[in-house]
Length: 218
Image 1 (tube, rainbow, N blue to C red):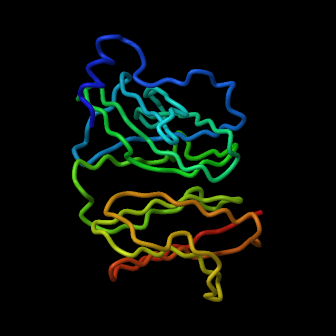
Image 2: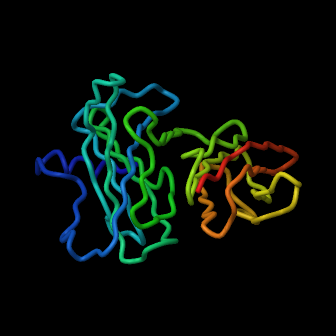
Image 3: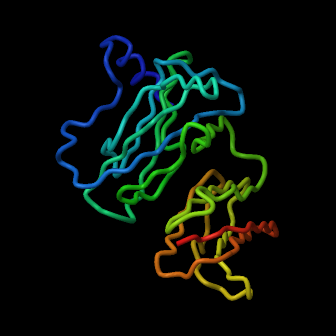
C-alpha cells in the first residue's frame, strides 16, 4: 500500500500509472479481471488496475461497469516484447480507500493471450492478511488450447510442488517445484506439444494435497 503515491494521484487528477508509448511493444494480450477482497471492498469507476514487469508499467485500465453481471471489471491489455514467458505482477488502486495495493498477483505473459471474459473473469483477491488456508484454484480456461492458468494460495511457507499427470498417472510436467512463501500465486501450463485429452493438476505442500481435472482440446 502507498498512501503518499495515492495522494499525489488525487492532487494531479490524472491516471496513477501510464505507458509512455504502446507502439514500443511487439506483443499484447487481454485479461478481464474482477478484483475482490476479504473485506468486500466496493469497486468504483475511479479504481485502476495496472500490470508491471521489472517495475515498468505494461498496461493500465480503469474499472468499467458490466451490466451483464452487475459488476465493475477491469478489461486490461498487457504489452511485452517477449512473446512468451515474461512474469508480470498486478497493482491496484482503490479510489474509495485512497490506497494502493502493490504486487497483489502475478501472471505469465503469452502473446495474444485471452484470459477471462465478462461472464467468467479472472479473479484477483486482495488479502489484507496472509491467507489462512491452502487452495488450488480452478484452471482457466478449461477446456483449453494450448495454455491454461492455475491460481494457488499458501497459508504458510513451504516446499510446493504442482505437477501435471496424464490419465495413466504418468508425470507429464512440473509447474512448481521449490520453496514458496505464504501468499497467492499463479502458474501457467503450455500444452502445445501435448495430445488432446484429459490431464490432472496436482498440488502438494506441507501435507496438503489437491487435484483437479483439465481437458486439452485441439
